[in-house]
Length: 451
Image (tube, rainbow, N blue to C red; front, side, top):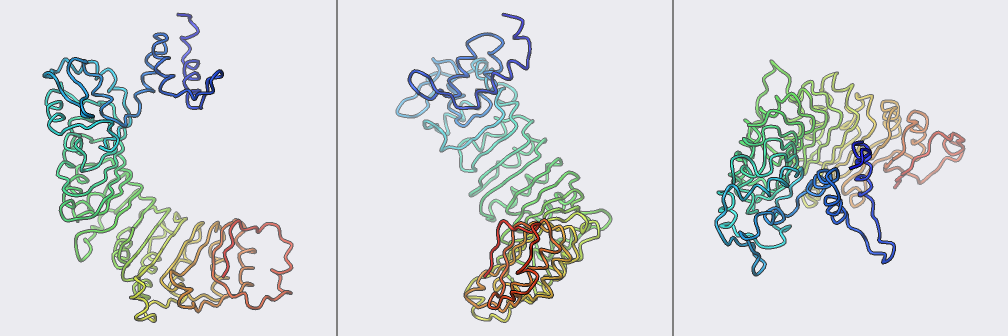
């Protein structure tokens, strides 16, 4: 082997080229990345390991790994993977040669090229040698109804940092996964928040101490207090807790000391208000609230004042606020007066001077005037995107009264504003207004939605 191949950068450059699409000059056929990697692995020793690492980096079909068992042990008959003879620990040696290279594993049944019976899988798992089958895995995605799900704690290693699981039904196998994967940093669970899964999800979370991202549909009060005290948690997405009233807060230490992004999705406004109250001095940069219940004027005002009561540290760091308040159409129609919101409801947000992105909506929108639009422009001089809408404002004829001339305040005080969506009255345009004759080129919104 020529000594030039001892230069690691040269080998890396060759393999980086594989990410682009290549075609065979004579036939025009597409040359697949996997096929090229296979050929490179057979070319020379210097290419073998890098090619195999890239070829096995992502595993989307568990059958591929099982096919690395000795050929006399298995067969595929009638589109099913079958075992023809007993499997011993030594039969996994060749499999481990490749499985140790896997970094991303999608353990989903619909990705399997042929059927794998639960009894066959159980027999294979029982024959595994000591240690994990995929010891160096970093990212895992799975479904709770997959035949692989009950065996994940035996298949994956302790280096997993990211996990995504679709949950539907009982999930008693979750806690063993947490015990195996102590290094988890990012957890994403998707599924209905049924009683049968709630305690298992919470038991999973309580075992993990290095989490940075948590996306779950549900936590009980014990999991909430555990997650709230995590030193490295930066991103939290949650729908609900299981207790009323909201869990108390121990003021001897700050809840969510590193939280920079909070998303409360499809929740009650009352729940969102209680959650915001416990943030204390969390260094939030982004707050997202998407409420689908209890979105009355009284409850909404309480939510915005809870946000306003955020500590001074929070006001300095918060740069993005999204509050989308929705309600069932029939509920709003029955008594629209409960949902009519003046600008005073959102006025508490003017206390956050560093906001760059603001997106607000309510069932009927917000009743604004020129004076308040001017106050927003003064308060949010760093604004880049602003959207204020009503869910059913058109159907109920919003009483919002700012004129199109009120937009002049944004041109004067918000030089970075590029996206604006705001309901204004353009019935009468005052042509001698400075906005109509402005020659200022510094204000050019990329998106301007006016109604």
